[in-house]
Amino acid sequence: MVNLSQLLHDFWLEYWPHIALILSLVISIPTAIHAAMNKKEVRAAIGWVGIILLSPFAGSILYIIAGVNRVRQTQISELRDKQIKEYINYDTPVVTNLRQQFDEHLEALQTLGNQISYFQLRSGNHIQLLQGGDEAYPAMLDAIHQAEHSIALQSYIFDNDRIGQQFVEALVKAKQRGVSVRVLIDAIGVRYSHPPVHRLLRKHGITCALFMSIPLLPLSFFKRPYANLRSHRKILIVDGRIAFTGGMNIREGFCSEFTNNNPAKDTHFSFQGPVVLQLMSTFAHDWEFTTNETLNYDFWCACTWDTPLPQVPARCVRSGPDRFLASTHSMLQGAFAVAQRHIRIQSPYFLPDQVLMGALNTAARRGVRVDIVIPKKNNLQLVSRAMLAQINEVIEAGCHVWMATGSFNHSKLITIDGQWSYVGSSNLDPRSLRLNFELDVEIYCRDIAQQIEQAIDEEIYSAEALSLEKLAQIPFKQRLINRIIWLASPYL
Image (spheres, rainbow, N blue to C red):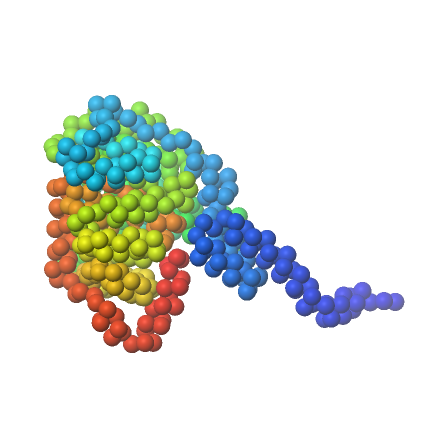
């Protein structure tokens, strides 16, 4: 009698290389075709196709997990792409003529923004710059304490530490007063502290949700592998009248009180005026995407404001791996192209792609002064090494690069010609520009630009200039390691 198991065993021993080859072709060829047809950047397409073909099984699995933008490719896109309502107050009309207050070339930026952002540039906004947690957190907590009917809070990181517990306490008291509260935290960012703060919020009855929650089971993970697509937005809106946004998460490391007067630095902004409605629209869209709850705009947004002077034009710019992909990338490319005198950039993670580096380099060669401030000591060492691997390209073109000393600065700030500012959550790295959901605000105001420039110039005053000579002094082994890390920069 023929032993079937023995026959199968013998067949496998003799033909397993052929079986493996056929399986690798069946798996890798469709996957490589998908990468070639869907990746918009030629370098990304070549890289993924190469990985898939050289390592058919591991490469294909890696592409399925990290390479496919499911926010655009699955039914999630139907939720993300719903028409978003901008709650409009017609007492603050769309800005139509910037020449009365600003240089003529800034009109091109307004035109660009009209094409990129769903929101219109509107005047009537009062904006205040808040330096660090010592200024931002008290202002935010005070607004929460004074809330009368609604609080919407969104953050990438919301730590369950001493400052985080102050926010929880303030939110609980607001809820007890009858205020409607919604809290949205990124599902990865919430894990930066333990136990995570959303458990404490829910314990006290605060309505809280996690953006792109990641299932723990492996099979579930393959159904919803969103670990690479995070909400990096930071928004607080109180009573639809006052809002806060910028680069600051909720962490005690930004407070002098909890760091022996040596906090990390960051910059946040408070807003009053029509831009608050744009921030609320952004939050409401993310909240509905996460929870399927539609927030009533008549309740969550104010119709009138008692906005103090001065009042300036501003608008929100959303970006993310949905239909707003590359919004910030396009805005910055245009801003660098129209700059005539001075570009100032402060970024903790400066890893622009070749297009943005080309725009900066071209500006420098046109005679525009370009100052770029990065931290000397970074909280992400891999990113710091990758930055050093490519920073020579902007220095060679004539840009001035400064390594800020002292406490780590997490600020994301850009000014053009002392009149236009771009602030918010976006870093100048591939993750912010293509993978994260980000929120920024463009501001047309000489006074705000001057305040930002002063903050950047203060960093430059005590910073170390980075030159090609200093880069050449880095040992070859370290430069090689930096370059290898730089190869993975799209996923750092």
